[in-house]
Length: 68
Image 1 (tube, one colour):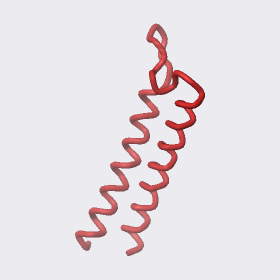
Image 2: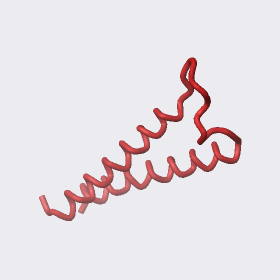
Image 3: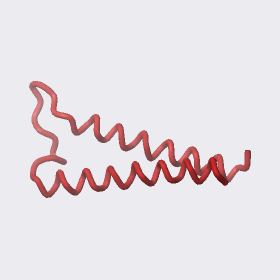
């Protein structure tokens, strides 16, 4: 496999893993205060848009690495 393709695939996997990690941290838990990222509607919207962008970028990097 070409090193560039491998780097694209690894970068895509890292983007997707970061997205799922952030979503896991945002989820409300019993007995703990609300995450600061979701304190208001504007912050929640911004966070979810950033996470969606990161996820889509990760998928795109993986596809680029595979199809190259």
